[in-house]
Image 1 (cartoon, rainbow over the protein chains, first blue to last red):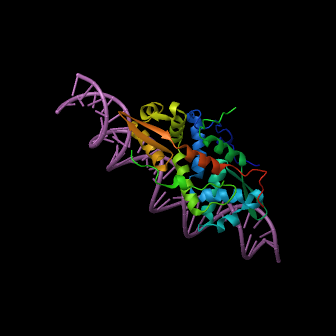
Image 2: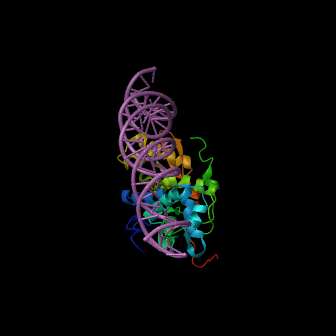
Image 3: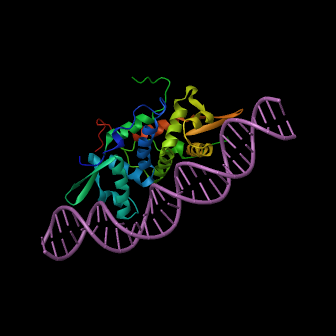
Length: 121
Length: 121
DNA sequence: GTCGTGTTTCGATAACTGTCTATCCAAGGA
DNA sequence: TCCTTGGATAGACAGTTATCGAAACACGAC
């Protein structure tokens, strides 16, 4: 895409939390992602985008789902974008957002608890 | 340590973010969990506890891993406890913490991205 | 070019968060 | 009993964040 995501998202650690202690660096990177999701509005935005048909949604769809002003929605989208969770692309009048599945997958993998049966390769 | 976890953690939604849009309620519950993890220190604490031999760690081990004062560590542990991610138990002189694997598993499941094979149109 | 719709940025304010010091409680040993 | 150690609580401070209204910007239609 363009110039978003110069950052932590892709370098975030992979080993599950419960297998090895996080380094301070990994913890900082991960915490930035979690912080981006630590807001009900942003979680719903993320979910709306991720679950939208075609894998993308325009801001006009998103603002209708909330009782918040446009600027506020834009702010939350910016936070999500800065964290690398989503990307935005302008096509004509509207801006379309889509999620970065790899980042979600990575977070999901990190949170997998230590199951006695699970042997990681 | 009486009864922590009277709350959201166990009711938090299960369907992956990317499959169905979160309701406002689900988003609030999930955001509380993510907020608890949206801090490098708390992430490392969680990781230290989860990855510790026996599945539990005492506070004395945890404080040594940081350059923070005892009360600060205690504060972060309290946040994690209040969110339902960990439980603490006093045994004699020391307090031992362990994670709630179900909560981690649930979060992990929620973050699983939409699988390319499962197309919802 | 101008106009209108949609989106972002700016500036301000209120609320929240992380950290500290000081203090207090619980358990164990002299 | 008193004293020491491990851990939690209380209160305060600085830095950050969420939200808004107003203004500015980008694009398409005309």
